[in-house]
Image (spheres, protein in one colour):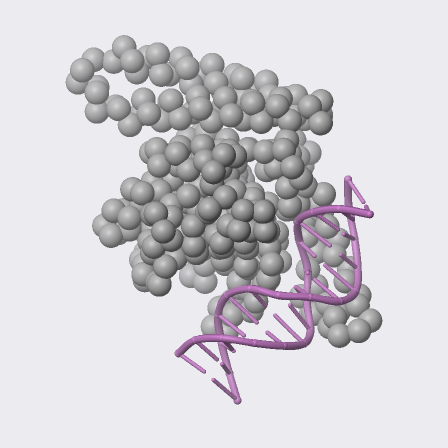
Length: 295
DNA sequence: ACTATTTGACCGTT
DNA sequence: AACGGTCAAATAGT
């Protein structure tokens, strides 16, 4: 599997390599900054993070993937024509036709296990659980739903902690996630909580479990989006995050399969983009590639 | 053949 | 009884 470098992947590799060089240069510059600029520490850290991200992305790209990630087979489209004769209820009015599969984005591989129309919600709620639930007994789950107020935002709620975070890249992501400097947090409480893991892009937030799946609530939204506390409610033991959805305002159906793809979509903040590299880990890698180069 | 996704059904909680 | 979360059979892609 080592030589799965498609032309697109090859291009991506070059891009990443280039990005890495840029990041290295940036870091070098920052190193030489005057003491006064030490407050740029965050920036330096960011530069370092960029390097790490690129390194991992490159490693993932060349090192080959690991196991099959969910959606690996359905990386792009999965015309789900489920015409069950018995009981299957067939397709509802909102026949779902998947276009992309993005079950990975925060270093963990999520597997969708359910979708539900929520009473007072315009959009269905999607239920994901850690793919390694069976392997490692990981109980981490998350719910993804389009924000009602702002369809351009995804509301992702995490439950439990990742017990599978013990050796795979996930671990790295957890560590790195804590260093993500560009997260926008709204609300003091949220910001505080964010430090344990919220200081990371939404798609990395799953690592935020502060030890034992305690509750945390943080938000992050698009740069343009003016914060409007809406989901600041603290709930049981979950972590709610709001991440920017694609500018295309994907439908609920799309959301079902690309809960996090949006974060890499068009409005691509260079900084955020770097963090996006995190999502390149293993399985997600291919998806991203196809999304960027084959569209 | 294997594995992930879909989606109706089932079950627990309120 | 209603709602929300999870299960599991069926389906589909590799």
